Length: 169
Image (cartoon, rainbow, N blue to C red; front, side):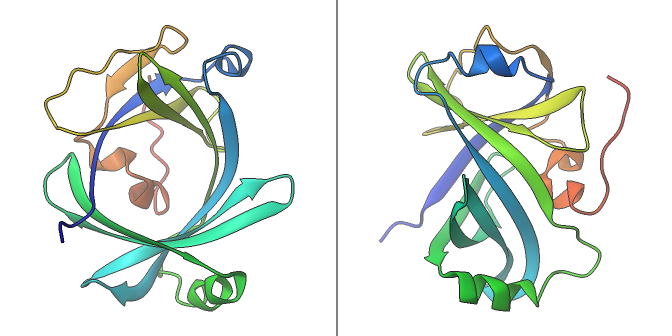
């Protein structure tokens, strides 16, 4: 059986106009709390997430193995609240829980995710998962790209859980 691959491109964008986003095709949003753990499975450390909205949440544990800067093997399993709370006890030392609101929509057949964090009021992330690393991705007109950060470790959530990147934009 083939391993589940995640191929993802990521951009730093100016803080989005949330009203414009809400009018995009297939728009939705979800609240996410993400915690990195020392809980080891698949020969790697992982993360757990609480996600949902309006008091209804699901919980997942995820493990990723790097293949390249854009591609990872990703194992993700839904867990119950009790397992989530148990794994939270194994939170990785020096890592904070990241809270964000993920806004999703489609544009020209691509699913985009924009993550808005409470510690930034001038920028956010936009991500797009694709089937191949070399695919051309159309940029939605409702966002202003600052730069691509797919290859910049300072803009990974695991890095932000330790140190919030605050360079001038």
